[in-house]
Image 1 (cartoon, helix red, strand yellow):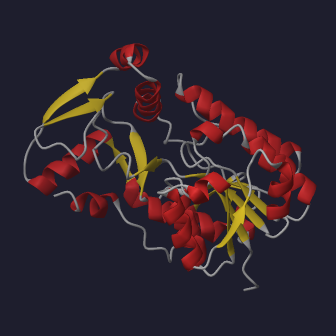
Image 2 (spheres, one colour):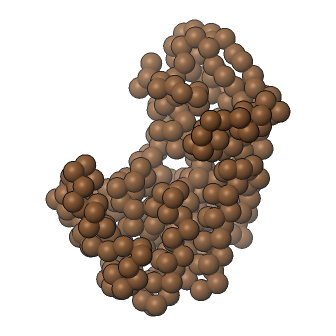
Amino acid sequence: MGERSKILIIGGTGSIGKFVLEASVKSGHPTFALFRESTISDSIKGKIVEGFKNSGVTILIGDLNDHESLVKAIKQVDVVISTVGRSQLTDQVKIVVAIKEAGNVKRFLPSEYGIDVDRDRAVEPAKSVTETKAQIRRAVEAQGIPYTYVTSYYFASYSLSTLIQPGATAPPRDKVIILGDGNVNAVFNCDHDIATYTIKAVDDPRTLNKILYIKPPKNIYSFNDLVSLWEKKIGKTLEKEYVPEEQILKQIAEAPNYISKFLLSLNHSIFVNGGHTNEIDPTFGVEASELYPEVEYKTVEEYLHQFV
């Protein structure tokens, strides 16, 4: 195996960014992270950045709106990984332009980490987020930039930690709300494993210009199966309330704020429209647990056990 690529991570203080940075360092990649001055001086985020620095990450100062700083940072690395949040997805066009100008990047991984955006049928407002991510894909391809798109499906920290119950802080003990008929399969992955698979892919020729689907077989569950597993763990049968599609769509329309609307529309896409059930086409997609069987991913059953 040759020398490991130098990796630049943009958005490293975000929810998945922290894990990707950690996985990069742990894998022995020379790891760089781009932060704004305001992030470094922030009382909370500044401590996170200091922790990265102490672990061996090279801290670079720059901004997506400062083209010169972006190009300068990109010229120091081989691979660029974006983990920016929802509010900065559109700004990734600036990363694409800077990568094209720098001319040295072997791989770009834009911020997706969810449903396969070219094969989703979400309603608003999740639809707009999905379309934005798809537009970034098209911008990458139009510029001829080598890429890997990561489709990680549902973060366990967002879903399994509450069993997808609105407003909950832990899995339910008495009553559970099930979206749709509960029979549609979804995929649930631990944040740490998503990051590990992402870093595994950066130097792998099998993932070049492909979609990396993180779809390990032990993490595919329908809502009904998930509830059944949880009931076995706690030794109790829960009261079940099924929410039909018409009611979910009504809840989206009447939700009091954007976040509520977004989460409802995302879950509608997953548990009603089957957003996680797409077959992997080998002409453009590969599956992470098949490529990297050495990764001991955390299963849904193992993840839920911590809440028993």
